[in-house]
Image (cartoon, rainbow, N blue to C red; front, side, top):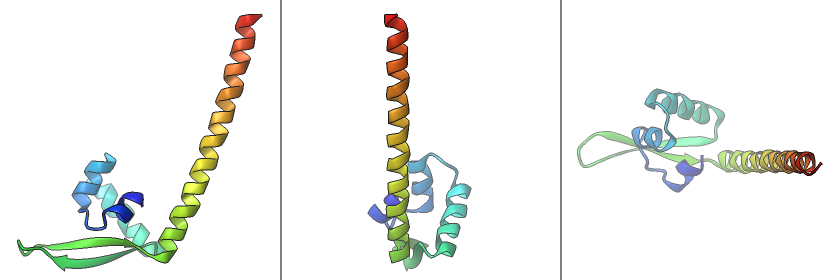
Length: 96
């Protein structure tokens, strides 16, 4: 979602490459985001006459992105604390 917000004109192929996933997976996920109302697709024409889309986060999408970022940070803080405890435990075992 951050990538779509930063680069709304990115193609699905470019998005797949940036994320390291298949084009089909990107297409499937984008459709789900549109269905949830988090992303809106706007089409426009390019000079080579092919149809392209711009992916714009909706207000609901921005709110969801914020919530997801908060959950992600909470998860990472918990992981960090667990790792710190494990390191302390291992250090105490080595010192014993």
